[in-house]
Length: 228
Ligand SMILES: [Fe+2]
Image 1 (cartoon, rainbow, N blue to C red):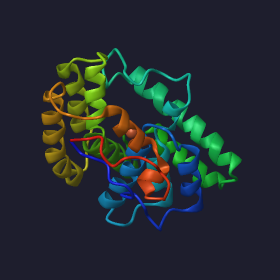
Image 2 (cartoon, rainbow, N blue to C red):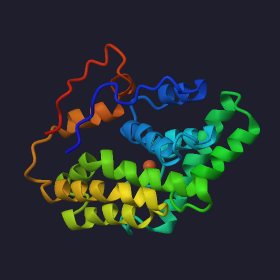
Image 3 (tube, rainbow, N blue to C red):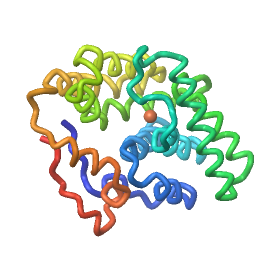
């Protein structure tokens, strides 16, 4: 189990728009996943990730923070295109509207929109990087979510494993696949022990949702425990 560390995602290179999106999405249970996806994008691009790619990584799942979207525990398989397209399109629309409100440049908005629309399917090297970073991040920091799914009966252990397998199958860049293998093994071990491991899922969700905790800002008021 991968515990979260306060301040793990503090980064002086955040742009004003990135800082704004982190405030907008504060309280979203996927906030750590978004920050972690951005970190993977930077690593996979070896420091040359474009501003649009970093921003798309930080916002690509935003729609799940706002009621009215497709279920985040789909019944027809994690690779169901109807689900993937509905999720990607809703996220792109919501993020684009937010960027327009902030006065972001039209060409930048268009590039971010294209990447968010493609984040589940890839296509083009930047979208392939984002897709791979999304998968790497799921394997690295969402092992608790897969345990949560199983414990609340949304999936069996075997059906939740399909998400881990889907995460591996969708990775295209060889470097990302290499990095994913140990994460896949660790996430699979955690899922196999879903009913045996000690974890405070409520506390872990709180950590993963808190901008202050993740950026290491004072007064987050969250215990560091929550995972074992
Ligand atoms: Fe994601």
